[in-house]
Image (cartoon, rainbow, N blue to C red; front, side, top):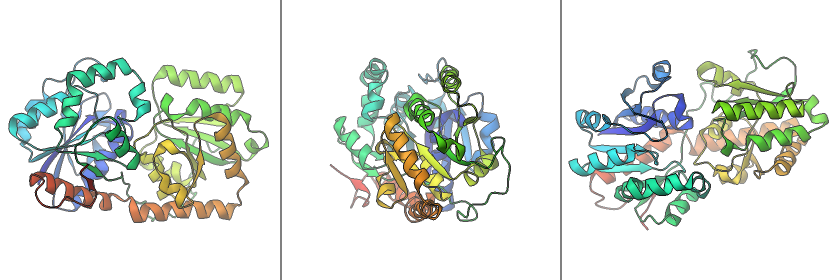
Length: 391
């Protein structure tokens, strides 16, 4: 089956969405039932990150004006040239939504829409006027027109229904590829922030207000003797003004010897970063299904997560400590982690690894997605796949 996966940025600027689209595309290609072509708009990092797609085919389109609007005049022509049997659209709130729907409607092409947590109440409350306008102009029709919606978990399914959409919804999580050594952690490299023998807690994600980093830094500032044994690594990048704000917080709290920003880590450096840390934290206000948490589990790391990370399986499997998105709760979670005997922390990490291996690999995800693609392509005749909720 020839499908085209339409996303936003084709580079690291897409954050976790980039790795989600590439991971799914490669797994679909391995199954030899689907030939995916990935599409994203060209930006300043596209050429640097193109190697990540190999052996997938990447087609880029151009946008005019702000990336947050996504105004494009050549996406439709690109789709016409590819002649897909099905379109898988990733994400909403950009003008590409209108172009994709218009192309599919004109050519009678079915499309699946993954909302990636973008109908979450917290997300809807941010820049609400802009989203209300976009929903009125094109996004509501785009969502309603999808042959099937895709939710990453139960919480996102509930958000879709609360937003008023009655389309069939496939509930399929994100996935990851297990590390080559099947998760056996080694510490055989020296990274720039490894200047002492303290253990490390890793935050790896987009540096964005919704990720709870301000609360995390406030919580870290309240630690006392624990800072003699632990440090915080923040991997990722975001808007410069927010990065500057976080740096000022570090300066005011005297944390420059305890909290380290690495910028974006990718490829081998990312692998080494996971292998050389002892725990992972994501104190977010809102997530779809965070890829970084699944990656952390695949590297045997115990985690601290808010419920808004939408991975309750981690609590059930004793792979995660539950925290809330405020400084006091984050502090309590950190103290709980630090007080655990080393063998208990290691067991938590192993629980996370087993959880990913049995439920969240890309091959498992791609198998479910292929069933949904075929059902949509067959005009939704016959029984729906087990992962699809019709009402």
